[in-house]
Image (cartoon, helix red, strand yellow):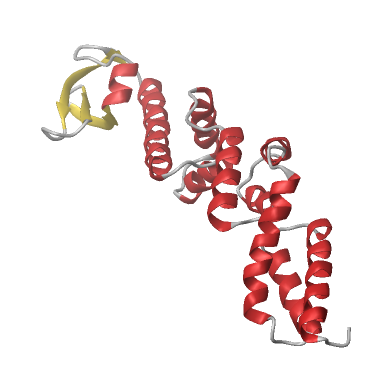
Length: 218
């Protein structure tokens, strides 16, 4: 004798979860999305494997809801969503399915994320390409997306940004002897992610200025 769904009961008036009863007994609780996806209805024949299948779908749907909430605060990378779901205890199988779905639907796009990150961090924080590359790699962005995002940075603009930052920092440390100024200025620019090709000419520039102003032995 086959089993069938004898009752479908909403958990709460405002909620989107339902209790499913099989042969008069409570069998499982599922989200409305799963209910609709599998077209569950009263009188529907059901097997034990069906219930297990619905439970797996429910778990994946729950992972999807957690992921949507996570990316709702601000844009994320595929890796960030993967790690967040892993920390929440979801299985690799469900995580992979959810992240692939979000990528296909356009909710996750590491290329767009990298472009936006580079633009914002350079504009708001004055960071150089090296630092930006490190930050994106930490967020799990693939090298080809990073390379593409960084390719839009004009070298002359990056040099000018580094020079502007160096001028501000130099004004605060110019009274020190040059070796100390050089160390502080160089470390500051390196920490902000500017390459040696940009930093060394700037140090040479301020070395000349410092010599003219202070007359230090260099």
